[in-house]
Length: 410
Image 1 (cartoon, rainbow, N blue to C red):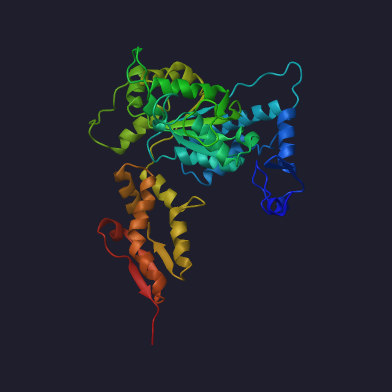
Image 2: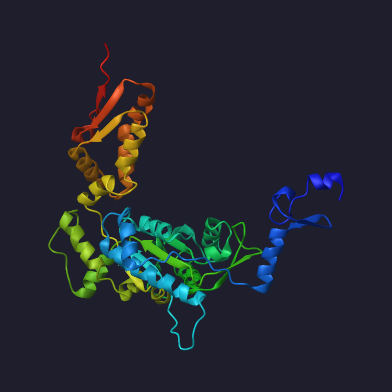
């Protein structure tokens, strides 16, 4: 090896420098380090790599979720049981099976609920609690292979990337697919043409949800002939799908032989919310099929949970109670500038009411607080005389400036 080669010697597979590895084996215009050699041996010998699962009991999972997600008790209980059974199944597969052992079926979870009700937060928090890789995909961007759009295999790639390309770890991760209701069949009749954004995508997702060895393009994008792929077994990946399923409650009401309680359909009375929540809690697979989901796809989700629309009281709690509560975050930001930030009860309720009117659930809360405090966050770091900021109800309802208390000077 020449001096110039020694100076530029890096592993051709992982890119590690010579000084970062124990041995660097040289070949014709290429190098391979000892770490990559061991990895190749593991692949050739097909040694199973098992990651220790942080398996919590259902009650423990729910308690952890309670720290970050307000309300949705029924959804939390359903998810906790489904997730516990799913990872218990994986653990039993990792251990040596005995003769006569029962095979557990795979658990996947379907979440119903309006926008901003906490579906994504539930899935993300769940992955953090169990300590597994997590990836989010939007069903509306997906298409069948061969059409313009994103292949379903790309959502597997996101999980692999979240696991730092540790395939064994990715294979026990969680994937959340949002807006799943947007890929329903456009009609209940079978079409002779391809339904690129509906049934075809459900069919494509079905393969990876039920468990298959998926060929994933290492850099994403479309598949090409003669391209190298990462092989990922989706058998033990937990799939959680969520959607608003607008008007599904009306289908359920029709099946149950119920009518609305007498409220005008154009009104948005709080009682209408309770009726919708009740109806969605009675959802059956046949309702989802009538909505436009194909029976095979619905059949892969044996846990169905309803995330209720958030009430004003829920939104107030979201502002102050979770571990990462919005008000606590901004209070801390101001505290770092030696300024005490205080919100009155009236202000909290006014923000919750404003978010409720926006119709986007908890998502509107941060924007409301950020907009309210923007000017103060601009001024405060440069004004050492500010010691206290008090936000009351009128600051929200009448755009009044928050009260500022300053240091008394000579």
